[in-house]
Length: 298
Image 1 (cartoon, rainbow, N blue to C red):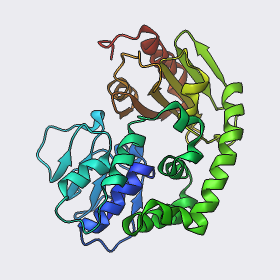
Image 2 (image 1 turned 180 degrees about the horizontal axis):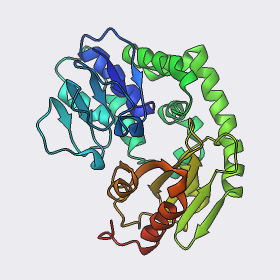
Image 3 (image 1 turned 60 degrees about the vertical axis):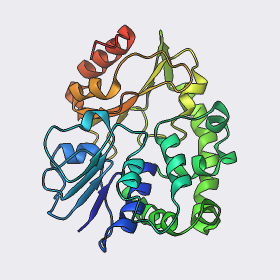
Image 4 (image 1 turned 120 degrees about the vertical axis):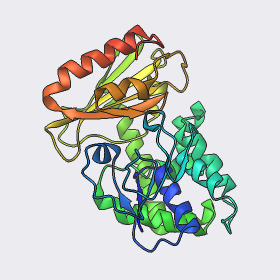
């Protein structure tokens, strides 16, 4: 039995809860959604998939993404909810020995991007927000760190988690990185009417930083588009789309829209990855849909 989860903060918290609720001995298998969608992962009987698309080979599945809904029977739980961790917490609520209510409340807020402007601009003032930003999910060399967070969050409150030397170092690095990222974001983003488009394809390695920052820097935009090469294959392009968390006037269901472009996600955020040969066509269509801003378009 393995836990198969996504390397973001919701995925880390989901794995922590599953270790507490189930008798899992194997290490977490960390994967991205498109790896499952492209059948690149050897899912086995007994595996528990969390915060990822459904695979019929698994024994339990937990998710909350709009585009991942299925119409067949399965074991586990699916709900349109702020976080997958919240779905898992509700499913196993009688089994937990620790009180995870604060952790789930904060995970719900972060994964649903229900943040204030102050939290976006000054994450160092907010423990859970800052911690979540140390989980970027882009580099497999960080697996030991993700696994450490799973262990820490299972056992300790947020103050003790942040006291861990490696976590403390990561948080310090994140604050510094966010400052650099702000300048890069400004230089590589253009505003097309009410759509901000950030293109990082000119970089040999995609810049990383505060994913909510774009909404504060471009307040006129109701939705953001970020374009980059896939971290493992520069023959593929990844596009992320997100409703502004401050200018809430985007009508497009992002997850539904991106399901047309080999991706998916929530109503307000999602991503897709496709071959470079499709990039010009796909990106133009995605931006056109967002410019049209019709809830019935996608």
